[in-house]
Amino acid sequence: MRLADVTTPARGAYVALEDLIALRFPARQLRLGRRNRALSVLAGPNKSNFRGRGIDFEEVRSYQPGDDIRSIDWRVTARTGSAHTKLFREERERPVLVAVDQRSSMFFGSSHCFKSVLAAQLSSLLAWSALDAGDRVGGLVFNGASHQEIRPRRSRKTVLALLSQVAKYNRALPLAAPADTGFNEILGNLRRIVRPGSSLFIVSDFRGAQDEQAREQLFQMAQHIEITAIACTDPLESELPRAGRYAVTDGRARSELDTADTGLRRSYSERARQRSELLSRDLLRLGIPMLRAQTDQAPFSLLQQFYGDPRR
Image (cartoon, rainbow, N blue to C red; front, top):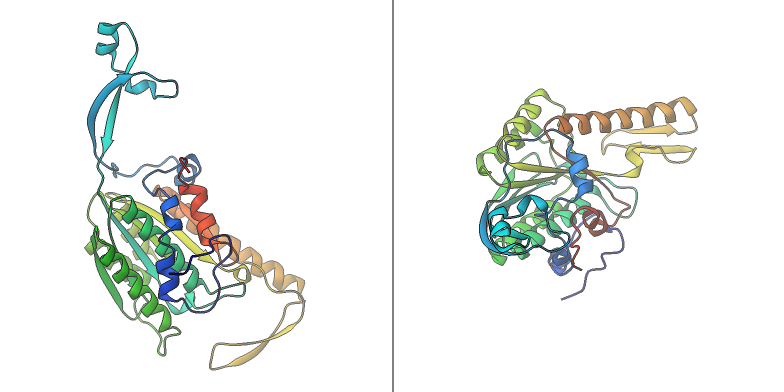
């Protein structure tokens, strides 16, 4: 099996299943169950009803520098005359679901790879990391015209099934006919398969997320599950290319764009900034952190910032 180079951005317009499988090894360096301080800041002060993993009391041992003082067992400390702390064992298994966007809007990229490829690699790292942690893994792959559910199981075979669907949907891009399913309907499908206490990662460009019905779906899910949003973007979506005249087409009509127009450049960048800030604010109100992933960034490096294993 080839070894994945996790130091460079993803490449290409399409993804290969063997590349997604190869990410199994670097994914072991991630710990999805531990939100570090940076990720907590992105989630804001609002808290959902999600309670996280259950914990069971395991043992009492002598207090060591760095232990949480809130876990000190005062009865044992008083009886022995020396500080003791309680240790707890987290549940080793929980449902982790990865929703992977492979809609036509994701079939775009100006730097290194398309957003659809970036989403595929991010999803692979998330799935392998969750499995390595002993969690049940499942997900939903969608393209707007159809979707495929993978029920969560703690099984390598299940992760492979999920990644196979990701690769299949990726290879079907671009869609021949316009998709009719709105983002709110996709979120509705997710609501059907997630269970309270689950952890959900949505890897998407979030086109349609500002729709009122989509917001309501997110609100309902955020009451009972932990959601993390990973927004896939491309540099060209926030800033026009250098000054010049460019031919643009949607596959049917053809036009010309003059990017030397200063007003056009400013307006384009401002609208992109406003869209991003609006999405971030909407998610922040629900306590949902949003990670921004760009096609010119290494997917592993992004996740390592927030889920890097401190023991490595």
